[in-house]
Length: 529
Image 1 (spheres, rainbow, N blue to C red):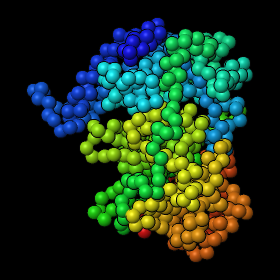
Image 2: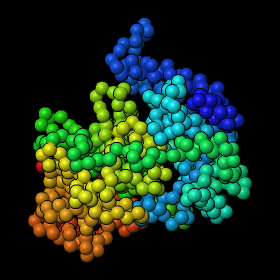
Image 3: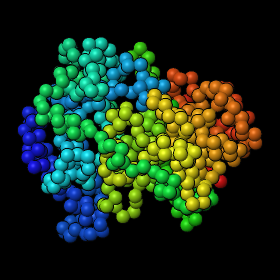
Image 4: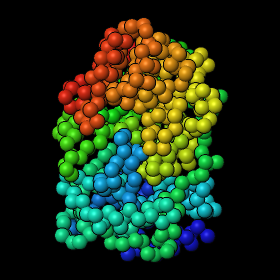
């Protein structure tokens, strides 16, 4: 039955790209997967030639997977068929979006087919028997990001935008479009940036012509199936008794590096357990927004080679054991999409790691924007979600380790259009990583013990504080010899706020700012005691 469904999809897509070329790529991946599995399982393949390392096989595969099974960019002179859908960024971008910026989810026909295979084999919510004998892409399948966004050359076209923003059953519709490298000056054409990420970010200027709504019923059904998400009963939620992968006790000499990624958060923590081994933790890894003014990107942090761009480029080399997403804002999680296979690869093919992801339950907009990442992590059983209602029944405490020197909290207010209020907070011994959760939304236990905090990664980029937030911060009456670190760079929010900084200086000996391109330092270090 499933083979029939796939053959039907082949028939629908055969005019858009070479099905034979796609099948040949799948055969290549099948051969590479057998070799990769054997090497990962410690088996030697005696071919009479020099044996390649698993990383070399993976790199070879990745090129095939990206170029043949995803095919993100048009060749020069090519008009490439794609499917597009409007993306509402209002709750994903810090401070919201006024609706005049163009952001589109994009999918090539090859991506549709690759997703379809993967979900048909693996997704419990996908209507299939899971007996299809085509698993060539499974080992090497990795969630990717693919989107069209306006740039400084984009001319806002009200006719196109109003067409794409129409909803059916409260959902945006999928349209067919063509992308190409040279403008044609046609009516429904828009110029912008095509972003793709399957390990590192690639951004290319392209032209996009909107054709019309997807008309073929079989095609629309396939798109709807891969665009679907699981219901709440199919996701794993954290409880206070669950394991988060942290050691029972944290030893001395633990440290955290707060990386300079501009107006975004990226924190990498090395926790020492009592055997002396490191447990490596990402607490957020975001990327800054381009910040448009009159259609022109004004973010100097992202122009040329800066400490910001160099740090973002190096993210793929990190090998975390635990990844915590404080909340689903672009500037706190977008960099995680650049991580290498260590963070994503199926556990059954690994012997040394089991990278665990932890995040709040996504809202509707986050599901739409990061659907492929979320679906993959759920299928691979690599993510636990923090449910707001559950965390609040335990006074905001999500989880703690045996010795209570690692605690995950959640902010105490749920606001649909302000995810900052319910951001996750990580406390390790004397150090608090607050995400974007302002002081007034901290759980009472954290507020009541604020004098224990010696180091703080300041919430919400040291934004302006109202009297409620100032009142909580003023509960800290002892002076700390540690650091308050502000994650900020170029922005249009007036961050960091001088009054907030001055108040922090009354509480902490050192108040540092990562600083974006204006600061050549690549990170600020915290010693956790």
